[in-house]
Amino acid sequence: MEILNRFLQLPKDSFFLFGPRGTGKSTWIGSVLKEAMVIDLLEPDIFRRYAARPETLLDVVRALPTPKTVVIDEIQKVPNVLDSVHKLMEEKRDIRFVLTGSSARKLKRSGIDLLAGRALLKTMHPFMAAELGSRFHLDEALKTGLVPVVWAASNPQESLAGYASLYLREEIQMEGLVRNIGHFARFLEIISFSHASLLNISNIARECELERKTVEGYIGILEDLLIAFRLPVFAKRAKRKVSEHPKLYLFDAGVYRSLRPQGPLDRPQEIEGCALEGLVAQHLRAWIAYGLSRNDLFFWRTRSGVEVDFIVYGDSGFWAIEVKNAARVRDEDLRPLRAFRDDFPECRPLLLYRGKERLSRYGILCLPCDEFLSSLSPGRPLMDISNL
Image (cartoon, rainbow, N blue to C red; front, side):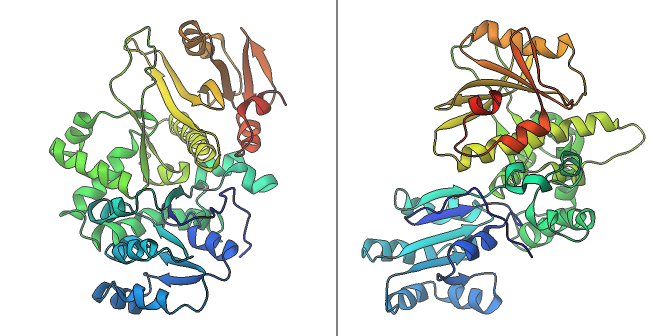
């Protein structure tokens, strides 16, 4: 399989690398750290060895003839190995540790804090459009997403259909994260309706016929497994009352489409609109994660319901971004951006749509969405993209 260059830069120091299953962590490490010693905890015999005696790592590393990089793949499988990593770091050996994982759940409970300040935290995301270049096609990305293991499959639709089952089987059921796998499977369907929407846990609990506390725990599992994230509301220097609820997104547009039930009462435009907004969200998250500047991602929504999809705030500037799944820009599409600009005249408003032309209305730049995504790359300010 062809290995594409990723935007993630290799740190010089030890680091954690988290990312959902299939985002290419092991492939990337294999391409940039060809000489590293790899301890793959997904291998049954290796897992049994380190689970029975985590301090085995001390014997292995101390026996290395020369300093090198040690990769421990899927570190969450045996969290106690972190104690040995910490001890080796204290011995000040000239060794870089690379600790990968698809879940932070066990590590949060068992020792990740021991390495605070000693290891950087990096994340791997689905492909960005600019990583794919001419192979990026917006329509296909909206259907099957950009998870590398799905994108590179001979049958992406079939691979995508099995993706959620993989998590249910290998991450949820085998790890014993929930008591009733049937309830969780139902929850996954219901939560897909909250993608790119305000997160109302009480409503979700009612739809699932579960207690609110149970649903809160399920959402926490999704976040720990890195397949969902919350977007907070932008409330800096707020002149109006804003929403108290965050928005929820699944990490990939294709994964959202695979979980979202469809039937005669579901409008395809609504589903594709949420997929498009989610695709922009995952790109902005990756752009922030891979970049060197400090930026944060928010959304803005007033109590009266005026909403701007994304607010980028940080070293790279102050941007308000609205996403519309339409080929034409109407004046009402620009009203939320104009309202936000009235409250925050320092911001630069930007509308992304499905048309083919660059437009400027009321001082707001309107860009084709595929052009914006294809131009978005770490280290490149949004200002450069808007001035193309």
